[in-house]
Length: 273
Image 1: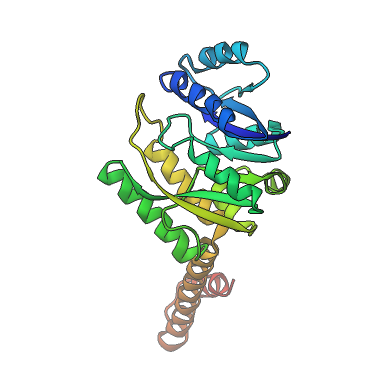
Image 2 (image 1 turned 180 degrees about the horizontal axis):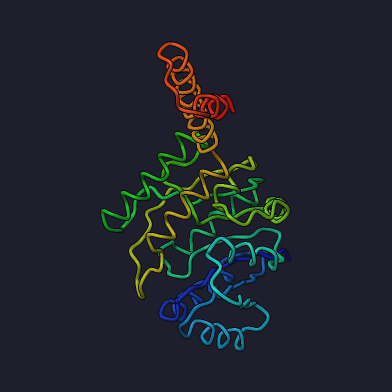
């Protein structure tokens, strides 16, 4: 019997977990010929998330693994930590807030059994605020324009991947990146399933503006040449300005005899460097 692992990053999800965990456990009854493993990573939560996880682990020690991080490292690091522990022939990822429908894993599993190395649940729409939709749509549009042109336009962070893909992700061991973009960038055969992301049922999202900005920076530094090219172009422009200014200083000294001791030669040297 093959094992299906589902990893769940947890950060201030004490209100969600009593609903999320039973729904995930119930999937095993519908996974014919597979056994289920749940790996939860508490990413430095300051609420009762760890206590809730330990309680369910005590009830289902053969199904639930709990990893406790020493502090908050971020969701990407938490997912990587869970992947390093998961033992399944395939590994799925879902958020703890149940905005993504767990039952979609059953369709993903069927596609994996048909030979797909990666199955991505791509958001066709979101039951979220205008601001959240605007940021998400802008971010993925920039990814498609400047980094990975065929990246799913709705983005994804709900997926099921083969053990081979998991091993490659762990081997890369990238710390500051968008893990989902990394999985897509690896180029394994994949298929996308569209779905509508639901509104959050309970609790408050900890996906702050600063974390969103960090994700944007990490994504473009890791997967796009634009930042490097922008820095190179800026350096070239300033070098040309300095060189031109040096020529002007030398011309002014030779043509008009402007006597600023040491200044023309120093400016020319700086400009040429």
